[in-house]
Every structure is written in structure tokens, then in C-alpha cells.
Length: 128
Image: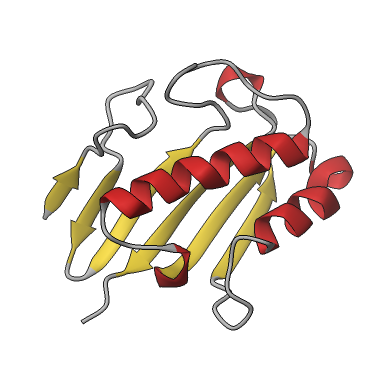
């Protein structure tokens, strides 16, 4: 197993790695909608927070020499599911190639760190 901390990646707020890799699979820790430059500071609204999360995921994937096309599964956590689902979904969808949509779970939760509206974690398969 390899434990990855990505230089310039989002600063972990707890004891965890950005990703763990084993047997060709890469498990990426859930990302929050803050930025490495301003940890704990969140943009307003679900669209901006979804974009921030996806950009944090992009940084981690790039550091692993992977991209959104390598994602096999995502898990999305929303604190305001009914209100934010449609806008989040449109923003999220824009990050993937049309023919490479990963499997996905999306759940409503009662709370996230920093009072974030969204968190996303994912699984990738490294190309062989």
C-alpha cells in the first residue's frame, strides 16, 4: 500500500492521507470546499462549493498523475439535499467526459466540517 500526501494539495484538517493506493485502486479522501491558500474559508452557495471541491479533487488527482476520466466511483454528501441537489449535479457533471461518468452515491447528511454544504470522496482505478 502507498499513502500519498500531495504537495500543494488541500491541507488535511485531521490525521489522514490525501489518498491511499493498493492493487491499482486509489482511494481519495473526501474533499471540502475550501482552498489550500485559505483553509476553513468556504465560498458561498452550492455551485461555488461544488466547484471548490472538484478543483481540490483535481489537484489531488493531478498529483497522482490521474484525472477525472480515471474515477470509478464517487460519494457525495450534501447538507441541504433537496435544495442543492439539482445545482450541485449540473456543476459536478461538467467535470467529466460525456462517456466517462463514474458510478455514484449521493446522500443527505446533517452536518459537515466548517458547516460546508458538500463533501466528495472517490475511488479511481490506475490504468494498466
